[in-house]
Amino acid sequence: MLVLIMGVLVAGAQDIYDNNQIETIFSKNKSNGGYGAFTMGYSQIDGRDALITGARGAFIFDHSFAIGLGGYGFVNNLDYSSYVHDNPETQFMLAGGYGGFFVEPIIGGTKPVHVSFPILLGMGGVALVENNGWGWDWDLDPYHPGHEYDHDIFFVVEPAVELEFNLTRFFRAAAYASYRFTSNIELYETDEDVLKGFNFGMTFKFGKF
Picture (cartoon, rainbow, N blue to C red):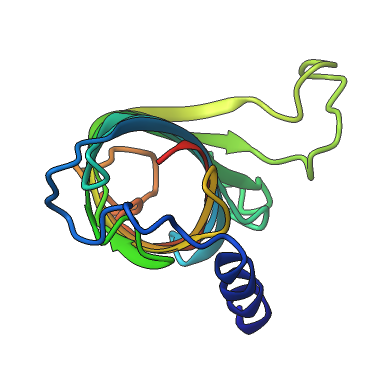
């Protein structure tokens, strides 16, 4: 993280804004834009490590407010296990995704380093999937590593804070932390709040800011 921050600061110093660029949230000079982004993050789901990946796109209004759509996928550690049909050797993992509409207030968007507060509102799905170590189970299906045992849908609200670095005029990187609130999950031998928890990761944005 220290190396990344130093690299960001150096790149930001090489890309100084013009004097007529706004320096506060509100300005007489209005400017709209937009961006596309991809995200990679870490979370814990059911007490096990999970990978979170996603993408989002948004319109930006006057450097201070963005609105758009986002979606994320997740899978928890491959050692997830559950007693199914009294067989403790059966291995399972949790996998799924969620997405929806988000709003993103931005504070100091023209500064080299600033913060934003995206809030996602949407819904998703989660499945309890048999884990064969990501290998092929030819007895079940030669094209899938396992089969779904149980599934459910849920509503989600995910507020976040992002510490964002302006690398160039068209590229930004942000370190983020968020908390995923969901409706109760109904899966076999799984806690109803299994998907609630913190996420940490990086977001990379490309566009006109």
